[in-house]
Image (cartoon, rainbow, N blue to C red; front, side):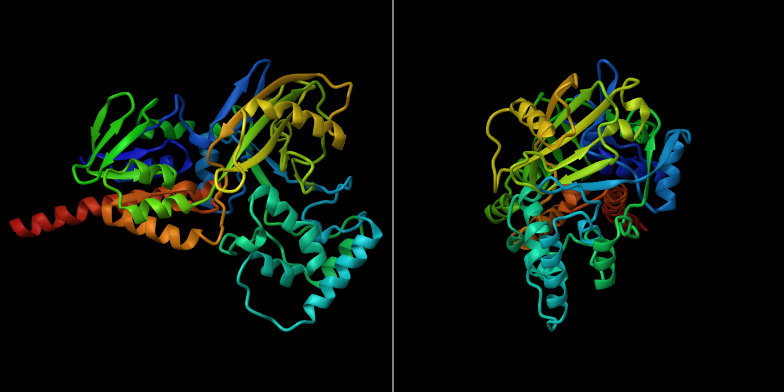
Length: 446
């Protein structure tokens, strides 16, 4: 039985374990945390509030993943029609804004449509960065008032410093007819890559994963401090040493490269260029459930400290005590572009202050729970350094035979189902690396 080690017990690590079990291999899985699940775990706080580590919903169209998740919760899940909205200078347009200009100030709507028409009349030109893509797609007024502003809050750099590699279906490019319809009508047709989603009825998003944990021999509180790829040996901060035949890692690439004994200077430099946001999650429990009619809200104003809100009690009634609501606010930083100073708890009161300013909280509300959590790695930033740096790092890991997976191993913009499948692919690569030399040995003997 090959000794395959998986680093991380989140969605990607469990995807690897799932594939390995299909090949008859139960991997040893190490996690630096004292709990399993990585960024897809959930926490319960008295008096009965459940919060995921960031907003997690399952909207995959992959029927295999749908069935797997549904079976993992014994078919006990909610299917919910999603409602997304935005906050911009006191207005609450539906999402995406480019299709819901109705209700914005008249002069803004006129400028946006005028610029949109003018841009569409220009000949096509090369697009070298995200800013140029936004201008070509929406015109200057909309681009500068909305997505460019949001980019500075969410990605923490300018649109000029970002590639378009991450876009996919995430930002809808409307026709003129769709823009006009959304400006005139308060209820234009919906155009979004998410229409419905599934969420476990109880236990938070983590419930989708619990039946997968037995697929691996999980060792918690094991933080890797060094990897010797030649001896195929891992050393941990608690003094434990472990050998492996093949290694699958969902560890963030900058941390992974720093662990590898003898990593070349150019690889270490490339890993240092990889940018990712850091997120402070502020979780609040409130004695009122009618906090919002949207499951998530995006905030463009740069004088509002949070970038996005999620309302976990709207995903499942079991995420909060009866009659109560919950709010999860995301406040973003980046070691490369906007370092965090102070502690996560320092952001609880600023979040409450801005929730009051927006009208989501009322002065009469009782905040029953206040918790802050730091996610050192949140969203990969697709800046202009990423592509070349990633090629260097991945090439080095490929040479060492270390299979990488997940958002922070592939260093991509991945949804949960994509992370799971990324783990499966990494496991497949690990199995191939083991089977190839063994097949060669068998041929040599025969």
